[in-house]
Length: 190
Ligand code: FNR
Image (cartoon, rainbow, N blue to C red; front, side):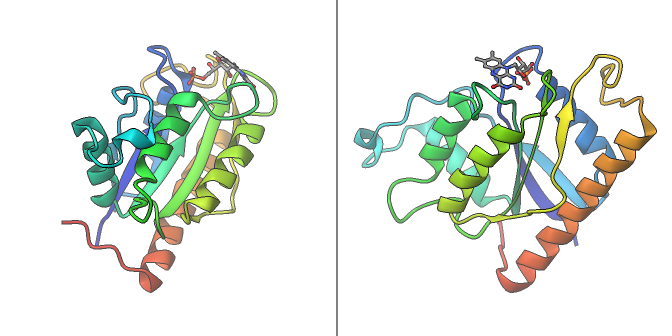
């Protein structure tokens, strides 16, 4: 079996280091994980006024999550939290009330920063949000990455063998987490 993983890049930057990290993760992931990016940059700002009639971009967002058996968040830290664009996407996906797309979904979070603590505070903030959204989060291992251009030279490469091994383990653990959750809570995306 293969598992369909939808992934969110929390940055809208054209030079995003987290997008670069996403390329690394896709390269080191187990072969039975199948990845699709779920875009967040085309969404209007969420308002409950839309609940009765979701715009096409938000319908597409929710369908992309529904088609996924798990979700992976690769996010920067903005002002010790997650970027507004990512929070906005999560808010859209969680509504209308009773139609939360994240309910019981296997999930993992990871991020890279230019700062020393490697998005640790943003990830705690995201974990609180995902808890309320009732996602089944992988709690270990945690992954806080400090970006340097020497470590991540581009094209999904990583120069440190220790970092590569760590990220390979992270993705293997995520795969096992997905399998464990789906054993109890099956998801059958069409
Ligand atoms: C940052 N940055 C940052 N870094 C950090 O470690 N903790 C933080 O709280 C913040 N806050 C923050 C706010 C805003 C508005 C910006 C634009 C940046 C720096 C951040 O780590 C750096 O810009 C990364 O390159 C962001 O990731 P992406 O967008 O390149 O993936």
